[in-house]
Image (tube, rainbow, N blue to C red):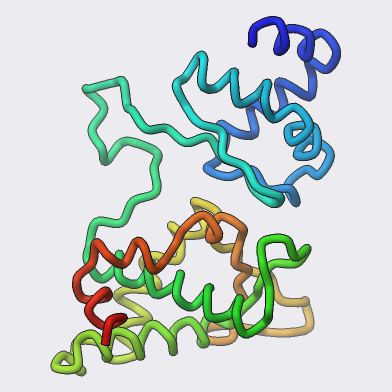
Length: 216
């Protein structure tokens, strides 16, 4: 591994350093971020994978659109979980809303006949996601209509998780053209390839409410 990586460094040190930094700077490295560097990493996937496994004990995960390094062990025992830079929801409603986003994403894939191999990513209106999440909460908690009114789902659940989903690059807000004003339900979001890495059906098994509703 050291010989292969050393040879690669001799030939393309600038590209090797750039790829390593990009992989560590954010949770996901997308092909659309830098197509040339993404293809370089893909072409030398084994060298990069060996490097992260050998020196960090981390796995390099990659598909045609997206790559990430996956950390399974934290070494600094004095670092509290709240201080770790990691994607995590702790409140049940936030976890349920994330599962519902995955459901929404999977439904849109089926409706549009799209897969991870398609060049373009799915885009959707915030209002369409809100409608789906609101409906699902009412299906799960039919006796809590007042608690899960549409305005409550928007302001107390979705508006709280959307910034985190953008921060960790699951979603990207699309700026409207200068001559068009869009707000609220008309805001457009792009579903980024990281969502393909999550299986909504499998994850829902850890949340009894959602699993029970899916089995009905």
